[in-house]
Length: 432
Image (cartoon, rainbow, N blue to C red; front, side):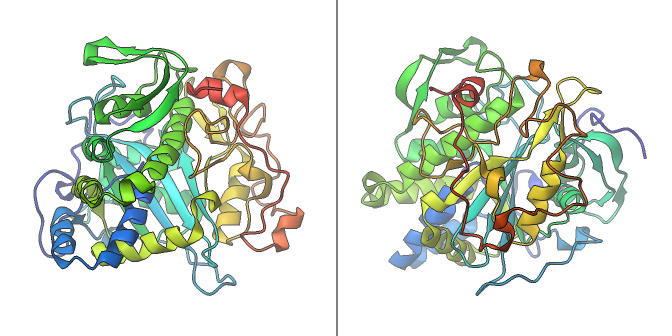
């Protein structure tokens, strides 16, 4: 297969993921990766209001695209104990840069800037959001385009190249073939709608340890605790250079922290008691969603399941990695990543793999909001798992976890997992 570490030019995305309404099998829908959780939770609450005209309006906003016919050689689900099956939702951030402020990271559009797996346990008592660094080096498998043609894969490919070549279908194909975890649903996020969601709740409070100055985009965020509007928030979660260690990993941690802050704001009494804010938020969110979830009613059902779990039991982590020695600036997953995916596939507790995670109830600057599994700076040669090279990890990829959590229920997490360190916060550009 050809080397596809960087996609040539920028392939045009399938028509279903560009602007314009689709009918029949591809009804209207766009997605919001970084704020899907807040959207689902809010939909779950609004569903109790039984406002039929709002449901119709939000349904018209959504772009529903079924990519099932494009997927093949899919992994089978593993039978687990619990009243329901585990639920796996793959969330992607649309990297189109076609909104005011969307190009703050000075990179070309056309790819997926963010990929997060949301996993709900079978007993619906816990959930995880697992971030995948866009700079991860993987074997990109062949995938199918919208018209059924084969898109050749590549070796040593960056994770986000799959979206550039074939949109969400190729990203799902890549995720399933790489991890062995079957995806139940997907959601794609539009960064333009992200701005609208933040503005709908009158901004989100964060703690910024140092000035953020992107003067070429008219973005200046002074250091300190402050409330960011939509455009400032977009800069905050997307900017890489000049903030923290300047890495994509630091940006992921900042994004994870902001998710917690936004969810907390959406679920605060100041928002829940303001019906106008709820409607504005959901209107902005649904305008930015592309998904295979059939309608608002089904999304609300998922939202109610998140609501029942509670924010403290929703954790965000990053795939264990080390910095690549063969491709500077890229990352490679360690064998701990194999353990992580195996635990998720079998709906097992993550144990010490939760180290450095953040809760959805935590906000930037709260002292443990960085998230991830604890990444060191690129210069020290270590990664999220603390290994010195991609070949070093907690166990071999074929090994299975043997700690006491193997036989525990998904909600019986060990008490020895730790929150993010001060170094994690500093590298991410967060207050300590």
